[in-house]
Length: 536
Image (cartoon, rainbow, N blue to C red; front, side):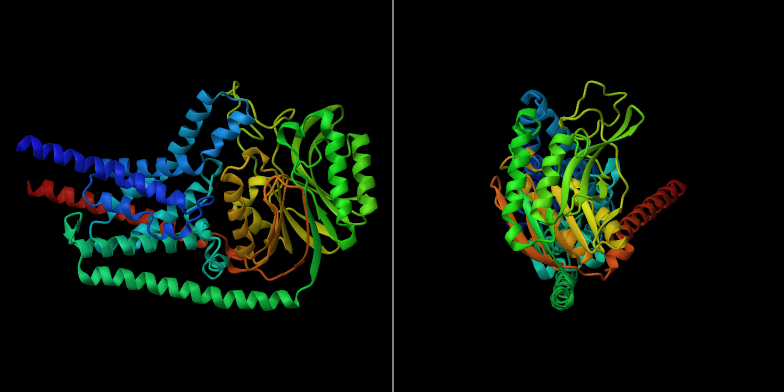
């Protein structure tokens, strides 16, 4: 009988430390594109939280790590495809690299789980600490080791217009907080209904009901604010000046993009697609990241073809191109750039990408990792440009962001704070094929428009390209891997939101609050330990 009891106990431990956290990880992934069942995010953490109620700190860490690892492996699986297809790495190396990144990201969920088990001594603490710790760790992930805030929990709700308007106060972290609050309330209600305990303490009816009411109140306030905000932004858009913009999606095969034999064909295709927009008289045509697979202005023959096309189209152009800085005969820096070119062919300005992709545009710790190359075909490493720099187009400042810069809210915010009236994201997502990555990338782009209440234009080589209005509506978008030209008039708003002015204050408060709680908890435990020693 005793042996049978031990076997049952072991099975129960496996369920709590593996099965339930694994389920949480998969539920979180299901809330994001391509699966796109965003409603899963409202309770995705509940299985993990259930597993924590009877675990030690060490096992809580393990449970959180299992949840995080399963989530990020299934969310960012496309990295292995990209590294194998375009990085020319063997699969035997791609999978360990994916595992390493997923393990690093999984540590944040592990720390979250251990933190909740540590400081939530009573069930009532959970309703406050679960959202607080979750948001604090998301914020740390956004900047630690250059940052990788890919698909924070709040991004899963990008389709819900009224709900996401709070981001113009709190950033995406406000939506993440609301989702974490929902998970905490459902978890406590579950414990109450099942008669289960948290850390040896039963959940009272008052705590369970209070947590549900707290969530309902916060959700209602966020939704009501959002409904009012959408109406006010719609009114502002009707009174605002506009700019007619055309997006050109060239759909250039990444395998051929940098092949010298295809450069003329690539440029001719972009020029022809641009000319097809001429009857609609756009003020600005936008080409994607590195649409010109050569050094614009330095390769005179190809540059001449582009400028003639611009002059024939009769519109201003924004063109993605690599560039370099020369001192005498020596090249001192390479940049991933965007050129603003007038309809007459005059260069109005240049933006250099400020936040570079590790191992894509530069090799971090190159001195110690000389054997690791870059996936981008380019001579030398790229250098970062100036954050917050805007380009002036006929009196309207433009905020340009290249590729995954758009997932860093502080960069868009810096541009709008610097008076950008329009945000433009140029990118090349051809690397990711038809995986989830282009859809995930596009979903995060939408939040930059809502946070700053600016129209946002996205031009991608193979898609997804599109227009997003200041309230966060997807006005138009293109399919993947299709030639496309879209033209729309976009409103130019000038108001500066609370988020634009003050940034991630909400997330900083959550981080500061979490640190204070952990310090107080450590101090109290130390006092209790000293008291016990004196008694003994």
